[in-house]
Length: 195
Image (tube, rainbow, N blue to C red):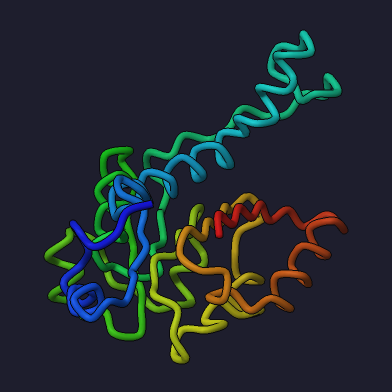
């Protein structure tokens, strides 16, 4: 853990006043967060964990118990929904575009100019949650806490993936619990929450 050098400008006054500001040099950054989001999207959508477990147990194209599953769909031509289009969301958008995905974005403050700058289409929140993959890239605040609600999770496709590399508080926790309970009853929602 380091102190002061390389800190964002907003923290520079603190060390000058003798206030320690800890940080991890080379730690989480905008690039690494977007990369993690994509690692999780790929792992979930391509069933990499299940395939690895199956392969390690000697099963070709099957899960750990040997049960087969359909081959994962290609991402090309699918729609990626980004909640938030700041620096991290924009990086995630470029990766989605590289995979040939139609990239959509929504946030409370997103405008057409920013969406066009990044090369994505601004949509309603309702349309965004009908995509094959949703990735969250918002700062947690009073305005964004619980911004992903039960109606949003219910709107997702049965084979959709949602990834949250931002903050857990963006997703309404009771809605998440209810969605997972529904999944256990046969409505598949794969959720990977890195924080």
